[in-house]
View (cartoon, rainbow, N blue to C red):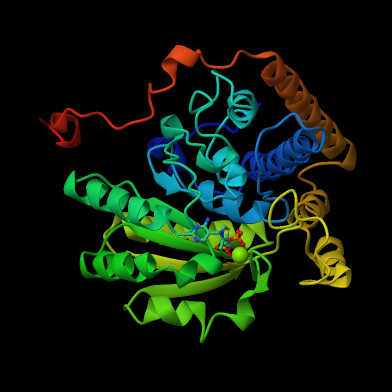
Length: 345
Ligand SMILES: Cc1ncc(C[n+]2csc(CCOP(=O)(O)OP(=O)(O)O)c2C)c(N)n1
Ligand SMILES: [Mg+2]
């Protein structure tokens, strides 16, 4: 089951009913379940290449994407499965993409680090750290030039703030008041290095230097993330953007699935503390039950249903066909007809 798709009209209904909360829980569990199954595929040597797990950061993607409509755009990172699921993607097409199968979102030619789902406004993951900053800013410029009210959210990590591109696009976005939200997932690490050891000053301060309103939020609290983002998205639609959000979060796995011996750069005690005391799914599950919005039995049933969906999608993807070798160049290069780049031409 995927999240209910929302048009802008439907989104006008205020948040706060049990359906919204349960959908957020479902989406976070779908991300965690997807990642657990993807990790298994890697460990059993059924998936080509490496992949970067989003487990632990679910409240960031879900809290933000739940504030967006299908027409709003996102750009994603090398750790992009969570963004893709949260923006409305289906397990089957995602697993097919990870396995290089023809029914994948990019016909198996993108893989984990380039997965895109333009039908849901996901302009794609990017293996180039910070590479999607220009794309999101361009999407926001397009929205403004076409007189639309679509917002673009740019997901990136703390390490990506070292990229010069961010400073170029923030300057442009601030000058032209573009409807873009820069969402920095600060998980404390850039590959195997603590961010504190490589980043001078505060990350928020860098956005503020361009006159951009900057916020920090607990990225393990889906409701806090969602409430903040809802407000900023509405203001961005009115031309009050751009905005910056620093989301304090943590990745549970290594930098990538092959990074299993991590003690030389972070302790097991630190990992345990985040998992035991700040897990976004456990926290939200407890809140749902305490508010009488779901029983433990209903939550267990939902978890089991999602697990079954994932297993079925994995089986489907494993059996699915690879793209035809004759199509190796198809859908890889941009169209050469320049008129496709001119709106209205
Ligand atoms: C331009 C570029 N430089 C370096 C790399 C190698 N690299 C891949 S991920 C990564 C760290 C990214 O850290 P962060 O932005 O914090 O994201 P996280 O992995 O923590 O989600 C680096 C340096 C790359 N892929 N692209
Ligand atoms: Mg990081």
